[in-house]
Each structure stands twice: as structure tokens, then as C-alpha cells.
Image (tube, rainbow, N blue to C red; front, side, top):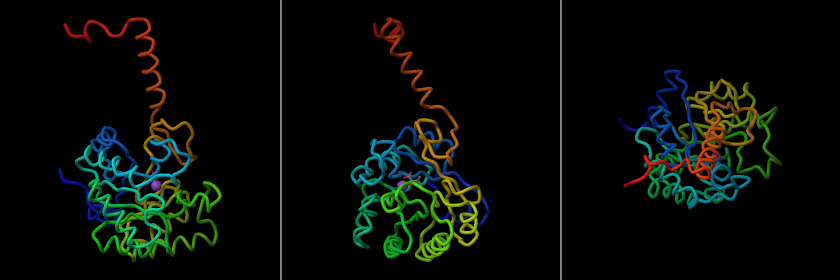
Length: 264
Ligand code: KIV
Ligand code: NA
């Protein structure tokens, strides 16, 4: 079948259909998510933590994410693959954003990009969209601004909520095809969702958004510590740990390999 496109995403909102999004960073897991029918996969700069072992998304580079994005594209046939623009690769201006965005499409085969921020990135959103690069926006707890926020905390409470609402409307007007709302009060996310004609994608934003996204290692139970908003659907760390311990014990005892695992 063909790939999911921005038109399909827009049509889902018109029909009032909710949809799931997951992060993906490699071909094999992306294929599992694609086969399960996840319509949109995000190669997030959360790779900084879950792939590269950094403490934040700040150190992630375009060169880190291009090969991961290419792998996710190669591992899938149906999902739309969105690439995160990393910190320091689009804030300087329109030219930098276009250069980075084009690299993800040309070198990795991404179908869209995501960037963080409201008012301050409107020129970048307009330029990317004008160049034919669909843009997913990201408001609320934007992790690339963790140093400015003074930690990972809920955003958009009180007057900040009106700022976020205005940013969301401006991003839609600038041409963004969707907007992630991260760690904001459920009531605000619901109001933003009602005010926009593009879909909202929530993470820690309650049940009122058009879509939901989670980092797959969080929802599958591979990440040791997760935020309150994560639901753990599996214990992948436990399953993997059990398999590894059995393999180790089998090697030590001589139980593996058996005759059926060898060549004669
Ligand atoms: O990098 C990421 O994984 C993200 C999602 C959590 C929205 O930006
Ligand atoms: Na991100």
C-alpha cells in the first residue's frame, strides 16, 4: 500500500478519528510499528537519551539523526516518517532551517520534519512549507529549551496558556500540518484542539487531543524511569533481561549451542 500523507492526516481530523504516533529509531522496530498500523512514526531527538545515552536532547546533531531516519524509512512501507530537527539546526533562521530540512528529505527520505517553538520559529515554518517540506510543530514542554525552563515541568498554566493558544493558531496559519502538545494541562490541550483545524498530538496533554504520541521505549517498558503520563504496555526490559540471562547460563553450562544449531 501507499504511504500515509499529510492529506490523510488532515482527513482524519475532519472525520473526528483519533490516531496513534510512536517514535522509531531503527529499521526492525519501525517495521513492527508499521505492520501494526501506526500511521506516523517520529524519529525524535529523544534519540539523544534512548539511543545515544545523553541526559537531554541538546547534544543531538543532524548527522546523528540522518542515519536513524534513513533506517526507519527503509524499514517501513506505509507510515509517514517525520524527522525531528535537532537543537541548533534551525533556530538561526530560514536558511539554516531550509538547509537542515532539505537534508532530512534528500539524505534520509523523511516525509516531514518537526521543530520546537511558537512565535520565534514562524518564519522557518513558512519557508519550509513553501519549499515543500511539511512541518509538524511542537509546543508546551519543548525539551530543547530545558535549560530555559529550569527543568522538565508542565507548561501552559495560567497566562502561559493564552500564549500557547496564540502560538498554536499562528503555527497553523504559517502552514504547519499538525502540532505536538507536550506536558500541558488537559483542559488547555482540549481548547487548542477545538480551536485548530490541524490535528493536535498530545503527550502528557490529556485525552482531548486528536492523536497521542509516546516514545516507544517508554510505552514498551525499556526505559527505567518514565514520566507520569506514560502508560507501560509491556515489560521489554524484563523480557530481554530474562533472555540474556538464559543465554549466558546456557553458554556457561554448555546447553547452547545444541547439535541443531550447528553445521556438519
Ligand atoms: O523527540 C521526541 O521523541 C519527541 C516526541 C516525544 C514528541 O519530540
Ligand atoms: Na523531540
